[in-house]
Length: 561
Image (cartoon, rainbow, N blue to C red; front, side, top):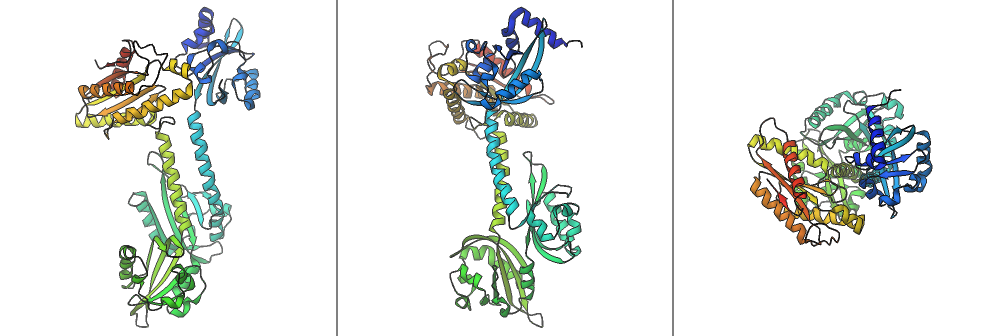
């Protein structure tokens, strides 16, 4: 088979410059090293030396299997023996004992008949720990999902069941396989379908984030039961609809009781729901034990007491009074909210008011049924928190906790387009820590990380406008996006940042900046009023070139022209 141009190029470089020439030609990669088929390291670039905390003098001739975690030695040896070139993940073991999780992209080439391997390493250790934290959170929710006392399902935007917990199958009387073959239309009582579809439409059009309603379901055995449905639309990090989370609570017993509650005699049941009947003046004429217990009382103690005398005034005015006025019109009312009871404490309750009418349909009072759905509410809150956590992690740098490169790229495009629309200035400050490799080699990577965190926080403190965006651009490089600022303003801000880093007085014994023994930075500044159909790349390119100029002008300086 004819060899590729890349193979020929690698062979040519190897013959002329040796393995060091190969890795130097790969300087645009995060990290690379060359080994022979027997797994001995021949050469490595600075990035790989920093990754494993070894100087190049100690790496040459070292078995590659000595650079990986103990449980991965056999795995790496097998890759070498099979001459595999498929990308894989590998856990490196640094000289100081740190585990580095990497993705490896290998390449095989030959020189005068001898086979060599060139591999690129990308460190994703920070993301590895973040993903493990998220997996643990997801496992907790998965346990709740499987054992919850309420029915829970994940439903595709097209209506297909994606995940079902055991309780939802039990409520509807189907096995999981049988239920997956149905749609929500199949299991919904025909008279309740229109309202469900209407609320779903409001959810899709963003008129609401979730909805709840009481509706009837048709079980597999054709019996009709009442359920309380709650539907939430989950969106991804880009705010695009992804799937629905559906909660179904069996309220059939509660509903049947409500329909029969025409007199106080029916309230003597030992239901776990809070049940009561009030007259037209909102005075209790009957309560069950559960209702009275929540207030630390016996049922007879509440008879004749006005409802507004036992509830907190603010809660009564905000939640109860309006619903009591509505039930007087003869309509049934359903609402939910947080209640703080003297005995049972803070609970999220679903409350139903049903009018009590006499034979002539004259209003006589209303029946109350209140169910504790705190578990359902907490599950909904936990899911929302998990979704928000995923979004936060995707936009923050794992070490410095400032904006990461992904978020910066999105923001600069948005601000660039805003500047075009407003015909306004936009500026960019690029910052690079001077001789940071020397710092890491001298003080170690833990101190290096501490240095990066201190500088990131100081830059965020100096660039303090709400519109300023401070980001870790890559390695020891930072970027500050300054919307609605001209070159003079941006240059002044850049100088303040440079001086603020000096003022931190972080010791740097191996800096090569003349007259300094502390950490310093080099800064490049660009600014423009963008033209239509132009690209933010222009702003980035100018700032990068000026940063390059600053680094070749003695460093510890700002270049804006």
